Image 1 (cartoon, one colour):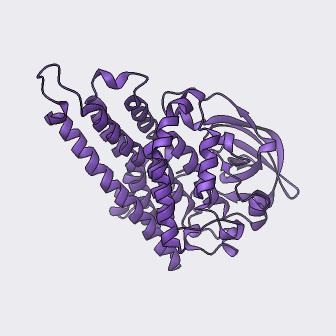
Image 2 (cartoon, helix red, strand yellow; image 1 turned 30 degrees about the vertical axis):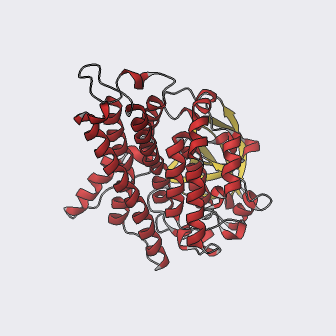
Image 3 (cartoon, helix red, strand yellow; image 1 turned 135 degrees about the horizontal axis):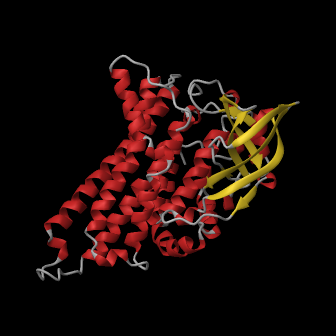
Length: 392
């Protein structure tokens, strides 16, 4: 099976899982993490190897396939899609590390998954052959399913030396403190490293200026998909889940409203002008954002295949379009929720849960900083050089 056919097959498998994911979502919310059964099925379906190098059992498929799989999964449950999406973003990132680091993670088990977070809450002190590393981080999505962690920190207290450190789970303590109103099923708990040695080959720079950095992994991984600047891939992975969340909300709204009659007019709610407007605009937004996600990832991959690196202006543009995705989905979701009436507020109704997930997703830096990206684009239009950002 060629890559195109395999990509279509994986998308179809993800779409086939939507009913099961919808059924599991309420219990995953109560548990505070995505079920092990779901991740087992993701592995069996081949989803967890889409962004992984072929050298370690991965598929190296176009990242537009990954986005479409994420959208399908999120149509069933955005929390499950979010937990999955971050692991794939991390697989893509690990491909840029020294090959020894990749072997540490995937050498014995190609199904190994990786969590984060990247926030520079770690303290690294230079020592022979590497770093002494410690810290505490919040928001480690999907950590219960992962055996390695990519953790952010500054080297020797120098904020210009912002790096990502690869640490095994054996050195990480997971703190069950995930008590939130949205994306409950992501299990984005805090993690703590009391103090461990991280060899130099398990560390790469992170942040501004690394878009054109010659990462050591490029020496062994030459697929164009694995050479796209990491942060642009991560932005798209995170925000693709909001597209799927919106798709799921539209489906639930249609199913919920179809048999309803207005208590005021006695007419079917499916004929109410405001309801039709909200649904029509949401559907149009959904289809536009799906097309844009595929287009941008394919364009970035074509650029990488030609040996080109996106410049600062292009990076800001691609970043903005990915980030704004979550904002537009949240706006559309709010309009839909306002048409759900009192029924949408009940805990046993999926409408409220899906709405909360979409709103919560908007707060992640990978989505929330769209205004800053837009300002950077505007600065460039006036001939200025926008200040590079540390994260996302």
